[in-house]
Length: 290
Image (cartoon, rainbow, N blue to C red; front, side):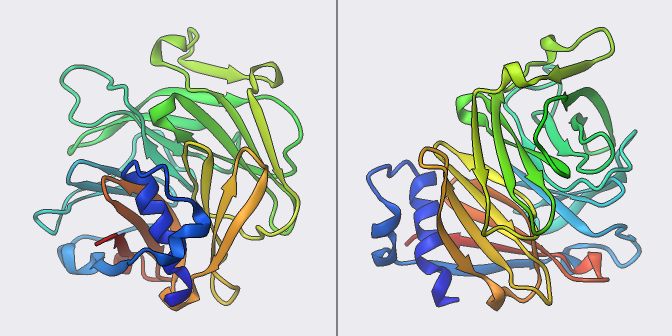
């Protein structure tokens, strides 16, 4: 645990707006880590949780966890309870990553639009209007460009209005490509957006260091990228999108399980971990500066 202290301290300082804190200084900042939940403790015994734990997205007091093949679980962090669980309409994908945007589908929407990475198949970003009762896909974003050797995920710097493709193939180079975040009004007659090489604003290529890539989160000039699963090393990388380099890699094997989704929410960093063969027992950790 001590080896991840300075990494997550930096993330939290960044999230709180302390832009003067540099990665090299973060080791000196105090950090507390807390296991928030084994989600099995928040889930009724009668509820079956299907599919391996994948993406995580935070909004207000809610944690949304999406699972392989399309199950959506919504937890109320204040009540410490599962408040909704259903299979997302039209989504049977791997759901490897998820994040909330700013835009809402309508004035009545409880949540902003949820962006879910299909990962496999056509690698679409499935823009989804979620409620406590169910969901519907309201836009599909595709990248029709070149260079990726394998699967593609999507992540975003929502505050600054950018979306990124992230991916590659295990053991091979990885790419982060930056685009303007489409609006719902940018959809064509089929409800789709097709991004091309001409839409790329910036590219970060990582030739070595990231092997088995998981979730992803972008904030400003930094990407935060979990990597690995047991029995391989579990790592958390910070990539500087200006220098195009991995600025720091931390070993997070002490947290035992497989790191998946990551989100920075208020003053907290949240990371969800999948327990192999036991999707009910997903674990949520948070980290905070004191």
